[in-house]
Amino acid sequence: MSGKPRLTYLDGRGRMESIRWLLAAAGVEFEEVYLETREQYEKLIKDGHLMFHQVPLVEMDGMKLVQTRAIMSYIAGKYNLHGKDLKERALIDMYVEGITDLMQMILVFPFSPPEAKEKNLDSLKDRAINRYFPVFEKVLKQHGQDFLVGNKMSWADVQLIEAILAVEEKIPAVLSGFPQLQAFKKRMSNVPTIKKFLQPGSPRKPPPDERYVATVKRVFKM
Ligand code: GSN
Image 1 (cartoon, rainbow, N blue to C red):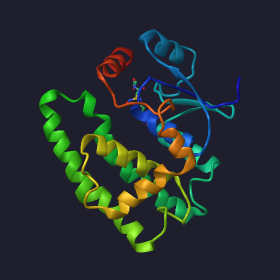
Image 2: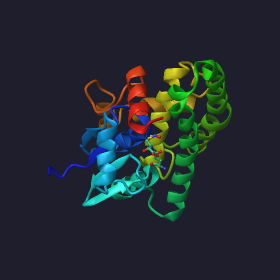
Image 3: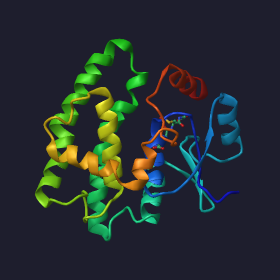
């Protein structure tokens, strides 16, 4: 064992991508195991590695962690990205859950029927511009600090920069009415650990393609 966290998922973004982002932002190197076949997944279940028969699975600190939020909460706590007290943590959790709801719309995109794509894109645009992004624009404007909570980078900032970039892939001009978020994006992209993660050759995954979708369907018999 190298001592690095070991991530088991598919070779694509899905639910694991936010975990990759958080570890990368914390400056933690990790290893990955990619599920390609149904047999690999069934073996993990048979060997008792998946508590609820689901991935993401992250093995670290002697634990087999499952459930995305639990995994991220552990990482955020361990690497000081979860606030200095319970009130900061509550705020970070609220921001993270909100952003996760927005990201959920993107997560299901590649699995929705082609005829639903335009409608889904319109809903994503509406929710990003009218519900989620205004919250963070206002927070940043009001306190004038570089980060969302406690003047220090947290899990919420990492989740937000991931979401901004993911939404921009679908709707390139989405930040046009959000000057604070444009500046936030620039600042976050220059945090050394994040800058590294954004460079080619990093563990960051590309947007899902047909091959990824086919693998997900094969492994999980969807
Ligand atoms: O957030 C979580 O980690 C869990 N509440 C859900 C995990 C989950 O649904 N994992 C999927 C693959 S990732 N895409 O959604 C999974 O393992 N599905 C197989 C199954 O039989 O549920």
